[in-house]
Length: 248
Image (tube, rainbow, N blue to C red; front, side, top):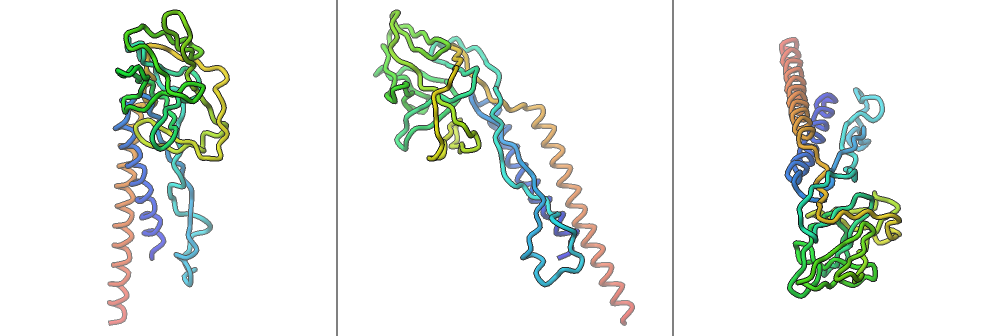
């Protein structure tokens, strides 16, 4: 394959992956607790692609590909909601929720009290206390949650929110809907100095304006690479036609 076409095609593929990533970010720009995904590029040149064809091979690794995606865990803006069961973290860490498949972690504190008194997520997952058990409240009572994560009713502490942090954030896997799962070998620990804001939600850290501008730039880059492929194909066609004229 022509080296120009191969490199341009690789670039088009990486831009397509970036478009998918940007589209997901923009779609979740209004999702509480969502963390934006970004791409990390690498220059890769596969030996198998050039086996037996070293002539014209670019020097070193020169095919741009998306090596991996990474997640931006920076703080999102806090929006007041007026609901006493809406919680936001102004510090590092994650709330813990219990699901049928095991614990999940989230920064989306859009919780509510079920009829049974259990503090739950919008999906019905129980919010976990520091003792690993679901937090159960009086559905008819007022709830006060301190910055340290103490859950109080009627002037008494009824539970302590489980807020954990991991030493390596790259060990987290996204599970959709603002949930994360740590790898099994990750050592989790209680957040050292949690800062819980009651009556607020942490919104997505996606910046729609930045994402829109980046989307336009990626589209333009894709179009330029398309032109490069077309140009290389035309050049190859002209070479073949000229050779045919000389030999005829």
